[in-house]
Amino acid sequence: MPRPFRFGVNLAAVDSGDSWRDKCRRAEELGYDVLLVPDHLGAPAPFPALVAAAEATERPRVGTFVLNAGLWNPALLAREIATCDRLTGGRLEVGLGTGYVRSEYERAGLPWGSPGERVDHLEHAVGELERLLADPGHTPASVQRPRPPLLIGGNGDRVLALAARRAEIVSLTGGRQLPGAPDGVLRLLSPDELEQRVAAYRRHAAAREAPAELNFLVQRVAVTDDRRAAARELVPHAMGLSEDELLEHPALLCGSTAEMAGQVLAHRERYGFTYFCVHEPALEAFAPVIRELRGT
Image 1 (spheres, one colour):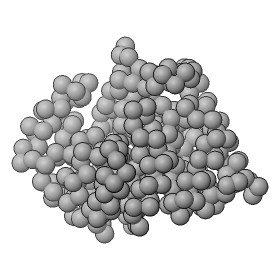
Image 2 (cartoon, rainbow, N blue to C red):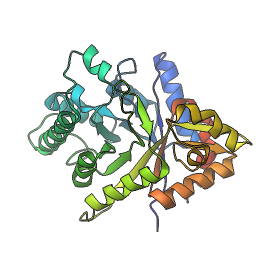
Image 3 (cartoon, rainbow, N blue to C red):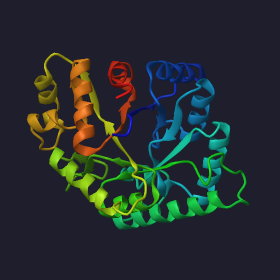
Image 4 (cartoon, helix red, strand yellow):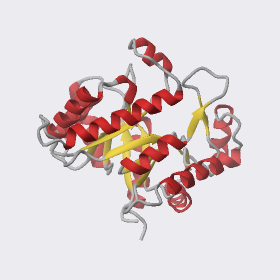
C-alpha cells in the first residue's frame, strides 16, 4: 500500500500575533497536516512562529522548511530545537538544507563558501544535532527521542546520500542554481531530471530498513478551466521548460479540484511523493484538493 498523503503549508508572513494565530487555525480547519515556516532574512524567525502556531492549534505538526544550516551554530540550534519541541508538545519536525541565497549570508556576516563547503557544514550540523539531542545529559531535552524527525532538502548527490543515511523525510527541491546567474536564481528541473534525482536518492537509500517520506514543495496552484493557459503563463519563468513539461511537473498544480487531485496521485505514482507542501498564497485554493484526496 502507498504511504498516506500529508499536506503542509509554508507560512511566510506575520502581521500580528492575532492574525498569525488566526491563520494557523484556518490552516488546521482546512485540513493541513503540517504548519511550516521558512528560514530567510525578511521572513519570521522560525522557532517563535512555530511555538505560536502550536499554541493556536491542536492537530497539525509544525516544522522548519528549511533551516539554512550555515546560519546556525549546531549547539545553539540544538537548544532551539529541544526547547521548541518541548513547547509544542513534541509536534516539531526539523527541516535542514545548505541554503541557496548568498545575499542572506552576506547580510548576516557569515561565510558563503563553495557548494562543497556548504554541504560539509550541513553534514557537520546534522551529526552534531544527532549527538547533542541524543545525549541523556543534554538540557533541555526534546520530547521526541532521540530527536524530532529530520527533513533534509536538496538535489545534489552528497545531500541525497546524507538524507538517505540520516533523514526521516527527504525534500526534493525541484530546482538547481542557474548557470551564470546570481546565486539564488534557480532553474526548475525538468520532470525527467526530477525523476532521475529521485532514482539517485533511492540508490543511496537502498540499504534503509524503513523508507523515508518523500516531500515536494508545489510552487503554484492555479484553479482554472484552461490548464494549458496556466502553463503558458509560467513558460517565461521556467528557464527552458516547455508547456508540456510544466503540465506534468509537480511544481505546478492547475485545473479543477478533480484534475489537481489526479495530478497529485500521478506524482505519487511517478516520483513517490506523498508529502506535498504549498506556499501561503495557495492556502485556500489547495484545500479542496486535500479534501478530495483525504484517505487515499
